[in-house]
Image 1: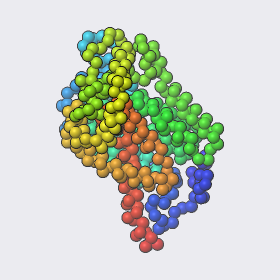
Image 2: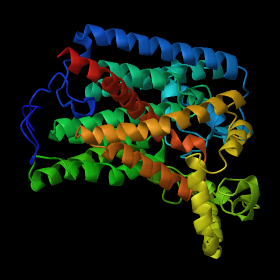
Image 3: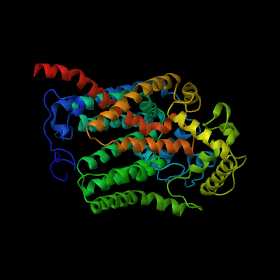
Image 4: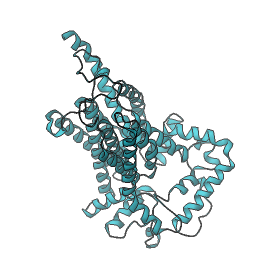
Length: 459
C-alpha cells in the first residue's frame, strides 16, 4: 500500500485490468489518474465546473440576496467582525461594539470565516455585497474540489457530474449569498474528504497529519466538526489495510497532534480572554437555551428553536459567564423533561433530514433563516433527488471496495449536532457536500451500466 497503488489489500486478489465488457460497478478504480493539470480532458471539466458554479452564485447573489439587509444575527456578526479585524481590533463582539462602541472579546463563533472576510475587506471588499461575492468564491472552490475528488474515485465524467451538482445545488449556494460560515464550512468539508481519501488510498504519516489539520480547520469554521476526531479519524485510520497495528496507532497519534497544533492558538487565546473556560466557542449555551422549552417540546415548533425559550434575563459578566448560565438553564429544562426528550430528539433529527414536516421547514427557512422561498423549495426538491442517488453511490463505492467511512462520519456528526441543538437545514451542510460527491459517482455508474452492454457486444 505504500508503493504500488495497485497492490492488493489483505485478502484481495491481485490487481488485474478490467475486461472490456465488465460491469461498471466491478471496475477497479483504485488506479490513480495522472495529475489533473496534465489531463487536457479534465482541464476542460474543471473550467466548465468553475464557470457554472461562478455564474450560478453571481446571478443568485445579485438577484436574491443583494438587497437583503443585515439582521441582528450571524450575518451581521461575521460582516462586522471582519471589518473590526481588518481595522486591527481583534476578534471583538460586533453586537456590543454596535451598541456601546466598546471592544469586548468574543468567541461566539470560531474565527476562520471572519478572518477570510477580513482579508477580503483589507483588499477593498468591505460591503455586504462584496462579502457575499467573496463567499461565492468559496462555493466555486467547493465545487472544484469535489470535482477533483470524484475524478480521483471515479474518473473524469464522475468529476464533471459531481462538480456540476455542487455548482447548482441550492442548499450549497444559498449559504454563499447570506454571509454565513457554512460557505467556508462546505469548502473545508470538501478538503477534509479529499484528505481522508488520500490517506486511505495511499497511507503516509504526513497524510495522517494533513487529515488532522483538515479536521481542525473545519472546526475553526464550525465547532461541531471537532466530533470528526472521534467519528472519522479513528475508524478510517484503524481500518487502513496493509499496515501493522502499531503503525496505524502512530498515524492516529500524528493525526491528533496535528489537529491539536492547529487548534491550540485559538484555544489558548480563549482561555486567556474569558472568566470561565472557553475552548472553541461560547455559543453552545445560547443554543441550548433557545432549543429547550415548552414551545419546542410540543406543537408547531417541536424539534426547532424559538425565542420563547430564552432566559428572562441574562446575568452580568463576560460572555463566558453568560454562556455558562444559559447552558445551565437549558440543561435544567432538559433534566426536568426527560420523558419528553426521545420525541424531541426524533423531531430534531427528522427536521435535519427533511423527513419531519419538510414543507414547514421551507417556511421556517424562509422566515427565520431568510434563505428565500424559491431557493428553499428548489433546495428541498433537489435534496430529495440527491439523497436516494447518494445511497446508490455508496453501494457503488462498496462494490468497488472504496471506503464509505467519510460520508457515514459526516452523517453521524450532523445528526448528533441536530439532536443536541435543533433541526435546521443549515446544520446539514457537510452532508449536502457529500451528496454532491456520491450522487455524481452514482450517476456516472448508471451511465457506465447503460454503456457496458454496448461495449460487450462490440467486443
